[in-house]
Length: 354
Image (cartoon, rainbow, N blue to C red):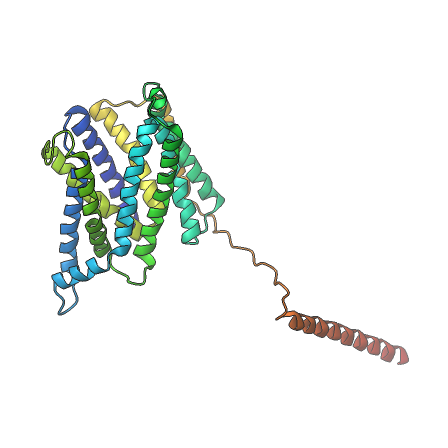
């Protein structure tokens, strides 16, 4: 199940990326991306409610369950607010630094997720896994070379840009991304309420809906106005986006946040290959080498057979409470040793007398 979900997530991410490039890059469609995301959240709400309806307890109605989930949705609303804050931070950083610099810093999400996994979930990773994650990060960074090595994409000539502000914003976003992934995993797996995956998805989508409404109002509906610029491709993207949100939750449920990150990273490679052959996107020799490096890093992490390192037990500290106990233990040990020596001496004397 775990491998199947991760493969489907990788394919979904790739299809979403290629189709979005076709929609906005070639067809030049001008719908609001926030309207698209809000439509995806609405689809998630409807689908999750349908799944919940098939898992109701006896004598429980769907409306009663939905009301209960809304009242208990604070944890998921907090996560939705974090996602909203990450969107705002991305907007601030891209206004002050170039997309290339942003891409370089964004790859640190891989390590931030692993770090929060070790801190919050107390997971132990072998040195092989840490090396694999660093190799993965560098491979994706090298694969993105056409973006960050583009001299035309530079905000340094913009007199209003503040590089320090942009850098701080993207670093905070990277940190929030890692924390949000592990927070979501912790709520899904070990939260005392133990709600199922569809109920958590319903809560998250319900909490995200008003946030996207605020974004839409702020941008005034985008270039095409409120509800404008939609097409069949945009509707298909909304359904793919909704599927992606559900698959992310399933991948965390059956795997963990790191494996989810591996799947979405692999999707970057797959989508770029599809983009090259379908839409004529770039695929240089450097990108091919970097793609192989990413695949090797994913395999090294996934198939690592190293045992998890065990923490060493610290020596027992001497305190007022255990000082007498330790002295008594030492005294008993000395008495036992003296008794053994006396018995040995007595045996020697007996042997000599005989």
